Length: 173
Image: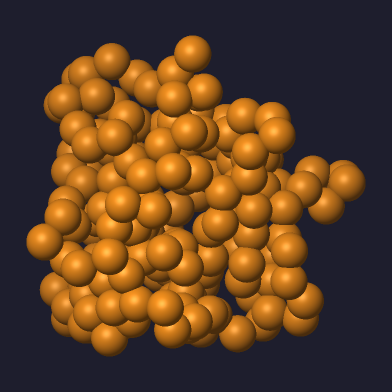
């Protein structure tokens, strides 16, 4: 039931937000195998189930059929809180950038997810949506330096994101 609610929220809540209609930027030429692995969620405009997330980690694994197994884990409310786990599947839907994905939490609904920032070393990324309603600032380590974080926030502002709902995700291991 929670997965159903999450899928419905992803698909419908974005329509309630005001947003720019300009195309959102995309990372160029994402090397999918290199992108796989663990990403710590540093900050986000969260979906309702993740509003109290701590120690959030998004993991991507490439399946034999080309789909991407996604595992999002976090602790609810504190570093010792209840462990939550979501396992949607993603498909890359553009070529050649590999930056536009469809994420499926529940069949048959697929949500728009886009890699809009990716540094050359594959150490920081931003996953956004064309609607600019949700966003995830992520890194390979549980912390990033303030200069990098501010550059990512400035990028989001330039892309038309309203950052008043952005929440830093506590990473306390």
